[in-house]
Image (cartoon, rainbow, N blue to C red):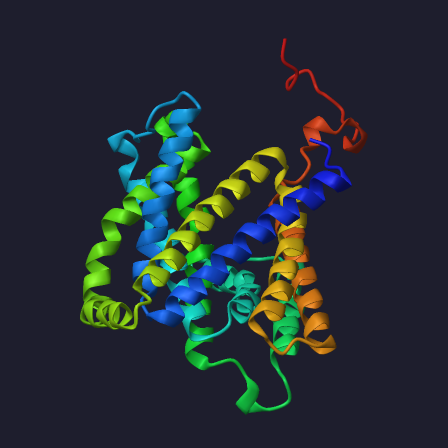
Length: 332
């Protein structure tokens, strides 16, 4: 569809607004109790329920997937869930604005994993990693090693990048299944969230089980348990609204148009986070963000250009050279 300025502004506002509310209340929740896995499972439970409600309201019922799709949807859910768990854990350690800044180097994780899998990339694609990484370094460096983001937070955000860059691989495996037509985008989202709800509880008990009751009892003793529950609920609601809005907007745009929208949204989220959470964000940071996001857009365009098949000479009459046809090679 043709994208007008007003439509684009509305799309950016919705994506930035829903993501910011999700991040603000998620940060409030993890500040009150360092339980990012509990926050994640609440987000997925809310999203599965609301996605089912959206599907029912659309007259399609609860979109339960065929059992043959479970392996591909299960793997897609696993990497997607791990990405958000690590994102929440990183945001619990440092500002969500810094987490989103580190998320800008996801193309580096994507290329690194691709190289390990035996893929090759054009020099044009590799060259875009220079502004992507250089911009993040420029925006992050504030004049001293003591002012760098915490290593644990950066490491968690980079691991989150690695998980998110695996999504296209399992998305392609899902799309290769002949039964994938049984689910629309909301149906797939519902099933991914439902699988996440099933696989997360063991990790919650293993990693946060010893903290869960002491933290909740501490909140109850302070009289702030209801506030913690409210922050988790609002973060979960806007987690769904952000994902749902993203799905709707993606359905209206071509991949190239959406790749243009993505860095714009990231830039606004980073700036809004800097303002809300009080991050040190000056001219140097703004230039670094612009350079990195420009590199991210160039990375998308370069990958699309490299993925295009070479022109077929048989379909390009202008490139054909005349040749002499002998009687022995001519077909009757």
